[in-house]
Each structure stands twice: as structure tokens, then as C-alpha cells.
Image 1: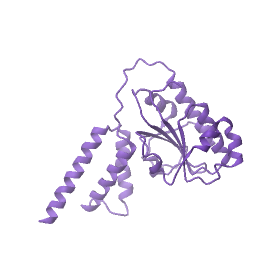
Image 2: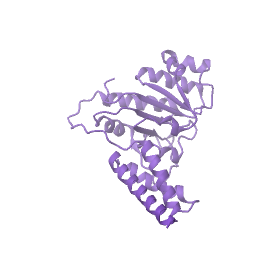
Image 3: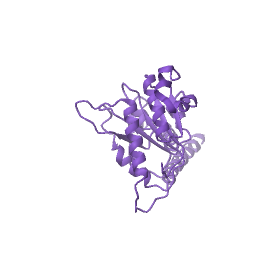
Image 4: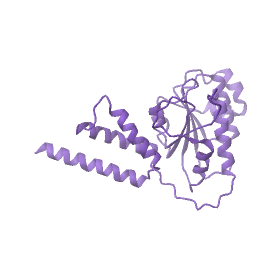
Length: 247
């Protein structure tokens, strides 16, 4: 697969079916995924069922990395994408098609570490988990039966990515400088603490309000430099507040 990125990490959050895990491992082999990561599995991912489904993808089961939380699973990724098939997400959520997402990825000159997250078979990803991603996407399906099997969803996304990577584009390639998921997450931890300290936010409603702001930043394709400017403002305000309190 010709790609403008390396080290594709495919992340499953709390998978409950060993057959799905095995099928996804096989897809990792089919589409040259670099690494399979699993967050808090709810089944025996090393079972005979899983291995039988994996076939030539068994190495992805043998060498998969396990994590206790999604935050830890994406710690080294500079671009994070999340899939959602849920219809009960926040009204502020914004989803793009998998095809548009794949074309967007290919418009960048280089991406060092790309992560694609897939949620639980029964309920997908939570709103908070979706906000850990730079972009979220869904796969359009029938309104009468919108939910796809986990491994089927993975196959469609990897296929779209593979198809897009082979398409010649005349667009001038951009320099990849989006703020990473970790940079945005760490910045908003500081922003929330500051706004709680000055009384703008209340503890019982702070998460909801911060998530609205965070969602706006994600949709704006905020760059690393822009995020650093915002973080610098927060640091300066905190310094001023601490200095005033000492007088």
C-alpha cells in the first residue's frame, strides 16, 4: 500500500468477541497495518477461536499491545481518528464520511503515527472518547439498521484508506502540523483547571462546557502552533493569578 504515513495503529476499545478480534487481526495483515492495540479487552483475545479467524494475521494477536485506557493507547500518535456508528451522540458532535476522512489524510505530506480507533461492539465509543480524536467519522448505512459488525467496519475503513492512497492527486501537499490529540487533551486539562479556579466553570457542569469548546478546536483543524499559543495564554493567566494571590 502506497502511503504518506507510517506506523498505522489500529485500536480496539473493549472488544467482547474473540471472533471479531481474530477477523480484525486478519485485516491488519491484509492491509499492512503496523500494529494492533487493544484497550481493556472483554474476551480472551488469545483464544483458539480468535487465532482460527486470524489465519495469517496471528502475528498481530501474538504481538498486540494491551492498554488500560484509550488515553494511554494513543500516547505516541500525532493523528488520531475515531469511528462511530452510534446515533445517540451529542448534538454538538460532527462526523465525516470514511471516504472524506481518507482523502483528507492523503492531502498531507507525511504523518508519522496514525491511529484509527474502533469502539465496543454494543455501544461504540463514549462522547469523551470521541473527543480524544482529531476527527471522527461514520460509515453511512441504512437508517433501519445503522450498526455494522466491528470487523466489517474495520474492513471498509482500511479499504477506503488503501483505495485513496493509490489515487493520484494534483493538489499541493500540505505540511502536517495539526495539534496532536495528546497536545489538545493536555491543554484542555489545564484550561479546565484554570476556569474552575476563577469561577467561570462549576464542577458539576465543567466537563460538558469544556467538551463543547474542545469539539470546536477539533473541528477547526487547529495547528500545533495555534495550540501552543492558547496554552501560553493559559500559563500566563495562571502565573498572574498566582502572583496576585501571593501579594
